[in-house]
Image (tube, rainbow, N blue to C red; front, side, top):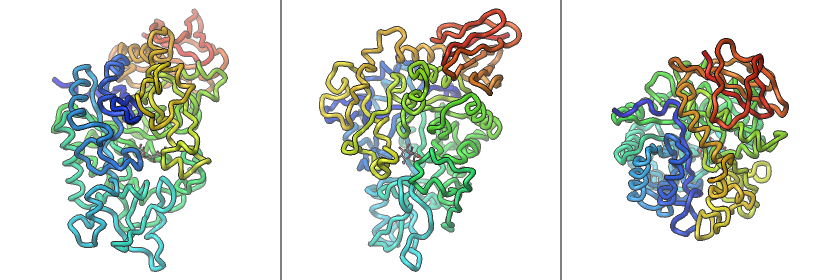
Length: 541
Ligand code: TEU
């Protein structure tokens, strides 16, 4: 019997294919490269991989602009390479999730090429077209995440089309049922090829308001200038009409119904919404008929972690989504790596960085780990001349874009391009990453890599950490503590997020300290001793 519930508490390892391993020598990673490295991924003991988009694409947004949903871009290989990857992953016990980017396509997709030809062709209504205002300006005030108006004028149709991201990423019109059917067909194609699930890009952007009403301004108390750069006015609108529409739920239900035809499929939806992320995650995951789980941007923002913040985010989630399931991530291909975003601000960055996976892997929810996070990679400083990310180029220097977390994976300390490629890597390999290469950490007992492995094994050995509920104990001050409980197993977890030693009272009843997790908190008869940035785990009665 397939384990239909495998996604609960699953650890998903995110692979950004351009930067994982290049076997063809063109400087860009490929599917064969991922397959070659599957034994490494298996050695981490994760449940699944999520592969960022590998479909044919003009790569204006590095694959998040798809021009054919049924294939593999030449640069990444072939469909046969993909089938082989899936077979090998399954042989090693790793499930495969792919990244479906269906809110928008590339402007080079044949659907859009046809759509823009005239106002009355069969696909005329497959994208979101609208008349200019009488003065020639765009239909409303909607903005693109990547800067400027969300509307671009098309000289042939003499109309504007909608794009939430780049102008080369036109927004598909979900109000058109043919579009929905076409996208479900795409989904079925990959289900038939044996994938185990999907990471669904920008699920809250699927529908737009048909009446094209202006977004109201965001009230100042709900602004968070740090989430996206203050230079981008996108951050100051309340996105109630361009995205986050109630109809999104209907399409997510259709998707789920399709997924239910196959055994043990799971979907994790990306909710790109800084202001009301948790509320949306709740709406999209409760009821068992939409997404299995979602991730919002709570822990992907620059806001520093604190016991209070962590408890309030998880507490809020439990409140709004008692039966929903979260997926937490500290890192992905869109945000500054936590080693730089958070740890560099700590008194002891190295120790702080080791605390992060202990914390992440103990929270209630599923977890995503982004390639290189397990090595402790820092954000690379990319020179303006080397920038590839359109988002970075647009907002430089206020915001340096996403290339700094997309540099090649470092495999060999002394290898050419760190063992990533025989050619010239599409983004430079930062010199400071070399000592962190896999081969440099592999056989070092206490390396970051082995720390992750040990923690992943620790989590797997304790079902309460995987599927248990969570009850917070201390949430104010520098120590966070909670109890994870599942069946008759209860685990007390405590984290010292400060640079000074802390003492806390042990939980009542029997306390049996657990080992093999890489932390050194100590139980004394009357208190628990937590060194700076350290943790303590115990089985309690
Ligand atoms: O990201 C959606 C999203 O909300 C991003 O705009 C995010 O806010 C931004 O990257 C800043 O961190 C997804 C993908 O993860 C991203 O790589 C794509 O560029 C985007 O969709 C468009 O498809």
